[in-house]
Image 1 (cartoon, rainbow, N blue to C red):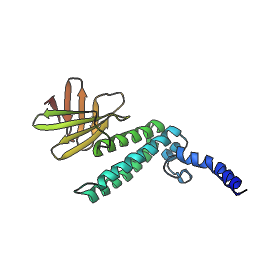
Image 2 (cartoon, rainbow, N blue to C red):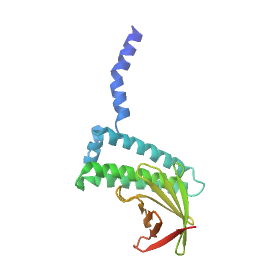
Image 3 (cartoon, rainbow, N blue to C red):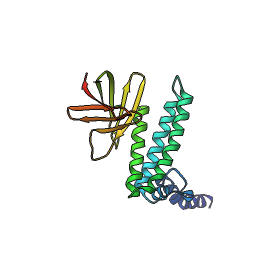
Image 4 (cartoon, helix red, strand yellow):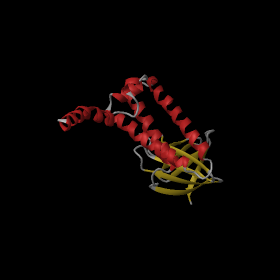
Length: 198
């Protein structure tokens, strides 16, 4: 009798367990923004939310394990994630909500992967760009990501738009264009320098 009751309780709870696994990482009963409400009703976006949560947890683990600056890096990472959530919720201003929310997730995932090297780079390209020596790491994330290393500075980025292959927006460093044989890198002030492979 006890086993029968226990089995019945498990069966009754199963739909809720599946729903929790299929839903986003936040409580849909408390969803306030239009982006959150959309995610709660869109299985694909909910899957993106879960995947990004895994990426973020991996990035936090990397940050906390740094030999130098772990506390500050982790603090900044958490602050940037809160800022990203606010930015995602601003998608209500976009002409079409869903593409905006999806792009926000894909761009944030690319940013985390590139900044914290959460997966191996698909290739590394050493470049000379005027007086600058940089190395570009490319990642085969759903939205292609790049990590530009210049000395001890790192500029993570992602493909600017799906219809502009080879053009990447770099956080804090303008644009990187890798269009077949033409490569250039910009700075935050809009100045671009032509690059050659070293």
